[in-house]
Image (tube, rainbow, N blue to C red; front, top):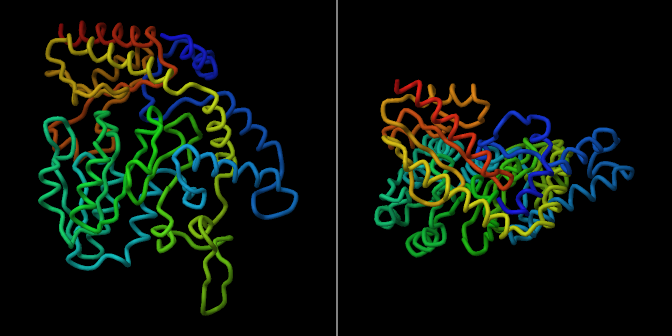
Length: 398
């Protein structure tokens, strides 16, 4: 493990407070750095809200600075950054927000590899509007089959939604190529779920070229309960709000409502102020680190882990890309049985369907074991994983 990753790890109190545990479930949620904990505690010992009173000006400034930091990291204008409660909220905001633009007979295209958050909102939208839902298959690389994509696109295609990185396999979609194909053959609005990408990829959304992007702060060392919707300004401008009330308006009468300007028109109600301010602190803290150096160590650790997994008899890894997220199955052993042994060994991994029932059904799997690394993981963490795996197999295969 490189020195920079060792230094990075020291900022996460989980490791000193839970020294017996090995954490390999960062695809579910990343651990929290001390800077986030400190500023959250500071907020809850203070008074005030945001955009409400003169005395809460410092917190309002921190709140809006967090928005600016998101805009900077993902290369967008701050007016194009909408606060939500998470990726699921962000995707539903789009699905309901463009509902009036969808008519019976229109087509919505998604991939089979989607998390429920990027599957069900489109399925339900198609059902409400009598539109057709088209679910794309994958190729041998676990990526969207571009030949099929090309064939299904038409003037009827109004929405195409897909993930940038799969939460099941860790496979990254060639989003830049996919978006180019969609633009050439339709006028569809393109929605990208990038929740699984933001931890280990510094995504520049301008290079991808989609219309909307969604992610959660807790996927990149931030707090739970904070999400972001990024969208092109003109697309956000015509998005119907999901919630109404609070300060998302300029004026209201008994017969008329005038919405506020972006981004506030889509942010009704009291936001997760502590979480948003905390996320801003995390983004500022992350700027202090050499992201490329952190990633170099992370991907080397991932490659070493993957190679070692491949040496096990009857173990099948889903996907061949070198990714910090790896899912595998062992023929003849149920994933839940393996998970129980990992828990006994105090190794935190994930097993099951990973909120992707349709994808697991497509893969003809009841579930998988998933381990996922982040920049704070070490060779020793991986060694603990394999020690636990060997112990489990010695008993389960006896």
